Image (cartoon, rainbow, N blue to C red; front, side):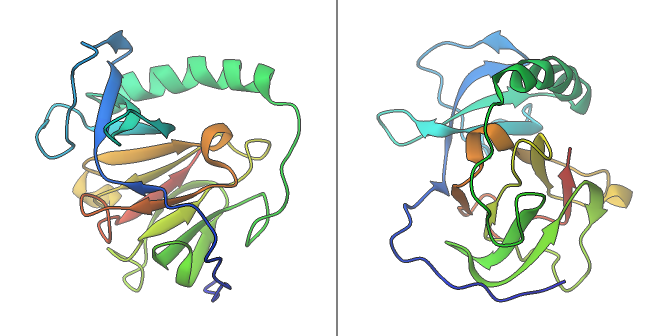
Length: 185
């Protein structure tokens, strides 16, 4: 389903430009380590936190394989369930779904997805510029993949719903109009 949302000019800019990795495969990295997504080919999946360091780099956890990422998810889901208390208000398609927009700050048309993995249809391939996640009471995480499942998914960038619900994440050049598949866990 494609819909056109109203825009909110007062919304804060959460453009994802560069990352400061706190951990890679759950191991602490040097506090001075700033790794740009293009310069570190070892990191396959990035979990973005809604916090920045003083230089404006987004704090993140890096994973070198989907297996290490899945192991983290299983442990982290248990922690998140214990922290989850109240749901926040309804977003565009409701708290059950993550909304994906064609322009920054929830601009233009959007699609939404409730759960599972989906290769994007050709009309949405390489078109996502921002997203708003589902509520953490409905699902745990949203992942954008650079390739379809038949192409091996490639790199991914993920957003834990308990961190990002109610916040619009804007994709910078590394991820703007690059996603070919989406996954809601």
